[in-house]
Length: 623
Image 1: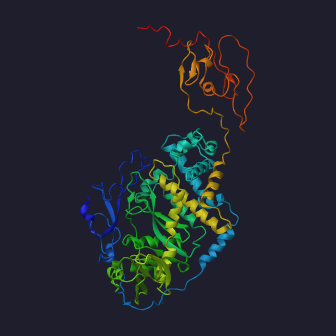
Image 2: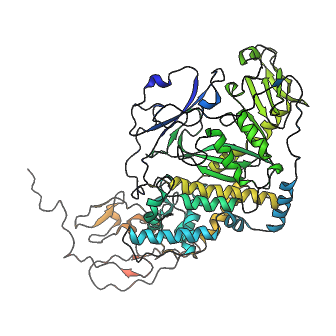
Image 3: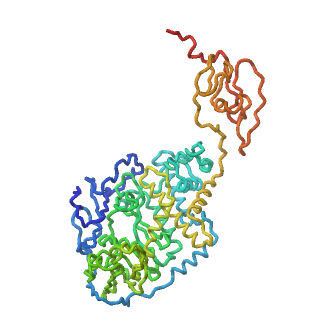
């Protein structure tokens, strides 16, 4: 059990907690029926069943070695990892890089080839370049298997057009949000969406959603170590689609994204200070324009050849496996990943890398500490160069102290940035090292992609724990397709218009269903017996306007204030004009309602005086 005192140290800033799931993957984890009432009210849970994994980001003043970072097994103290054998030789001099290979220009050539290949492609074609036909076929195959084997519905069938229509409804919900998914089929003028009603019936939509599946449950025994087993095939295929044109941007960044999720699942994390505090963590490799090349669901401590590496080193090296030619690119990441050993490893592989770094990971670099730098003027910086491994460390004083580490960049030439001076109450320019300026310019690729996904994210929720991951994959495909559209189009659409093009095209794949014309009044008026002979009238109608014994139905009563009984139209035409009423049939004796119901002109039943309900006042004794 975790004790609160274990994390009460004032030096710790952020605590990431993961409750590790059982080692075996359960087939019966498709449904989540419990309510999420008080999840995540406290950063430190009082008790968690099983093992708990805690990631602690400490302040830069902690003099701990690099080997103490990374992931702990939860069953004992963390093992000290092997670091670089070479000892740093810090010198106060300008960097001189001699080991790094020359930079190449393959990224721009791939970008030009992409523009030529996709020239004139429509938004739907670009989206299907990401969400490919192989993915649709896989979803249909596994959905039919799940419906027959688990849901005992072997007669269920689904076509590609139906699946695309279903996904089109999900895409539409990103920019047309309603309180409930059932409201899209509502007959109310302020709720219903006619394009959705014409595309697919509500019962068919709900059945597809209940049967939707992405993995064969019978193979769970061979994937016991994969906690993302349910969604893994779809993520693997989408990663391949994202990289089908190669890595066509020079500047890359590695960072984390959080997929919003409020249900109960062991992989859900809580991170204090994030815009989205609860959800699934995903590592991502993105370009500076927001295009995502690779992503990976974080599933806790892993087993494999890289399990002894620090967490940051392992994540960065795995993300960069998507890059074919390292010398074509520059990589940026934050202090969660940066260490001297990682910079040395990337330099040996040919990668140019820059990142913010914690003070305890600089290998005793003789720079003034942050407390001393904070007392200097804004814009002051100090630089040290490691002549052994050719690593540069720069510390710059801005609103707070910032420490950067790079294996290819330097602090010269200096840039000038505008800052607000509180003492003078005016803006002024301060000097900024080039290393910091380039980091600020190219580091935000993952954040840009995450922001674009959340701008019009799918609003329809599901009970399955991986539903939010599935909808996130759709949103990521939309964003990547839109970025491709911006590269190949001279007058690009906005993200909203691009998403609308895809949604509308998918909603029209099955054709437009002929909707039955229903009465305009969806709410029945208050009907009561208010005639001496028992005739029904709507509340608010005058009793004198009805002849004794005449029966008034609800539709007739709703229109009584505007049209005389017997002269109102049967129904509205599709263009909104009124259809002329039929000629009145001759009276056959007895009282009869002369209005009609529906488009077929069927008459109401006769309301003869023998069948009329006696008045409640008749025969009542007075006392």
